[in-house]
Image (cartoon, rainbow, N blue to C red; front, side, top):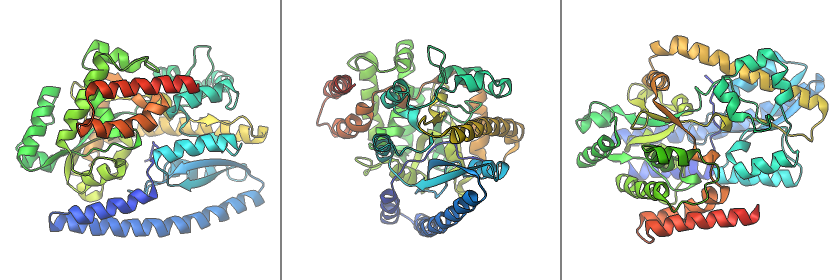
Length: 457
């Protein structure tokens, strides 16, 4: 199964995670898991070095065969060692052997580093032919489209009935601009783009909880019961756009009609309103249920706490199902956010074609984009045909959640300004949690990011 989201964590975080595991292990089981993960990490690092050598040899062979090389940068998760979309790359290179070759540079970066490097490579005109995370930078995406740095794909998709018919209408609408242009080649479906809550059924059982809470009131009661049983309810962090807590807080805000509409807004004009205040207050409450080391840490620390059994819940997307350790396949479950909500912005999974490349490279990229859409369609069909009988409980949970979700709301990363995401949250969220600033001061800082962003753009 393809890993469908770039995993953007730094290699330094890997070693931090290992140290955290070893130092916080409270029993022999956690210690054994720490040793296992450490060994896996060592193997991943050496394996990556060997794979880079193999990749270079493959690239040399492709050049010798006369294949058109298509440069692309993809991510490697330092927590699991999984290479993003590796199966997709191998399938395309095999299908188009001698004609096109995806020349992948595999990298480990934090989310902030990945964003900064994309901008730097644009300045130096060293961008790869394919950009996989462009829509996660709304302002940069707008600039790239306005300056003609990425190709309008609408004529290719709309003139190819086979390709267009592969794409769900909601997905196509999400990547289509008001003037009809399409700068992001989508997957066929939004089925792989949804986020909810992963939870540890064994830890829930220890606290006497048999089902995942359906309402936010029940969710807070669940957290209290877990905490009373000596179990940390939530794995959280504040760096990397505060991904996990922000998923939870924005899902909570969608309870009201006003909140749901606010979350759809691209570049909100202010956060000093009822919804902005509620999000800040929810963040405060969430961090009363997390680990002691959640401040100033990135997702990898939260990830490690969850999969070492140190915390009972973590918010994340479909792509994490592939990373569930075999020994936890019967333990890890998946649910919608309380209120039967999933978070999904399928446009963030669209990939862009950099316009400065030669026509032959562009033709290869177009072929690859259609191939990717086809692969995602086939994967969805297979997933929904076979998934219900899967032994992976999180997968069967996810399919049920996707089929029965009452509300889909946007991912904040697709709509909020980059300064707020990359700087404000990392700086001011810990201050809010530590009680050094008020909710009013926090939302004021968010509004300052709007003014700074507008001044720069």
